[in-house]
Length: 119
Length: 112
Image 1: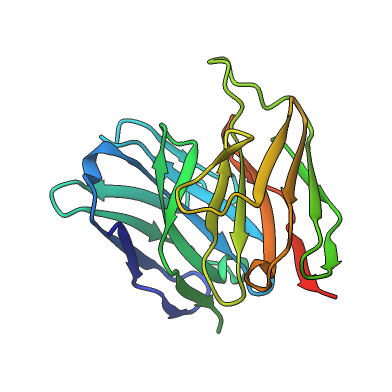
Image 2: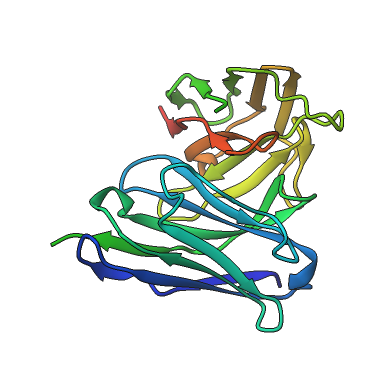
């Protein structure tokens, strides 16, 4: 079965850093782009970042550009999100998603990991 | 950025009756490759989102055929032919034609 499992969330103070991980299984990881999408408590979905299968192309939402870094390790079937200079408005559940058909089809989602930014 | 809007934002429905959700984009979602990357996702309470429909009208694997998508350009529709209890949740349209990818605000479907 295709599976994505996020980890690394938690409570962090404003200005702090956190690194999220997403472990993939059940498919050829290196064939797919990967994405992070977040959802603030009680709110809708917000795309955060995408990375191509070989890490050649990387995209960020303006709200996180310059603060977050997406990366992947195809040997470890994992994608990461390094989050720096965290703000209260970054508080959200962060979902890892697989991007099929290039980036365009978010066909598999993890259960999410909660990041809370608070003093 | 492409802005996605949805109507209605809330839809109480009767079990067994149809439901329809509209999604509009602020600009055409036709990609230079000729495809239109408009998807519909379902988020049941307490669950992560799940892909229902991609490229306007293609049902994803395992999605019941009571779900259908249609539209073109900037106007799209998700229809549920006969609502079942498991369909309760929030439905989002999403465009992946152009970065940044954007989602609609969501439509909450519950049972009347």
